[in-house]
Length: 93
Image 1 (cartoon, rainbow, N blue to C red):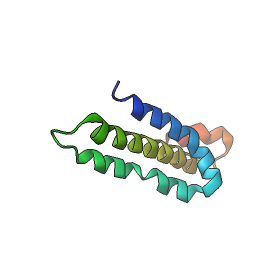
Image 2: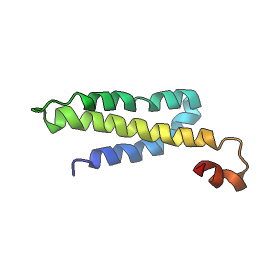
Image 3: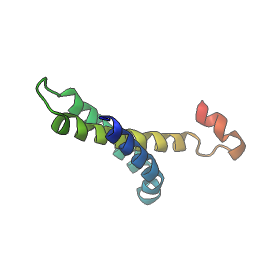
Image 4: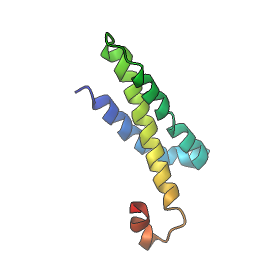
């Protein structure tokens, strides 16, 4: 149950990434996606006497959003300019 917010944030981020890319461009979208690093840094600062709401929920959601936005946009950039018949192969490379 504690990982559901991370999963929901990942789903939301992957849904919003194409819209964000069309609105602000690929570079800004990838840069926004790198906010996951802030979430991971925040997670690294968990203390032994911390609690879920203060120490895990926020950084998990931030990391989930950032990772999903970055992955979707980086995959789109990787297959940009590839003919449609080769897009699957290029995406897996």
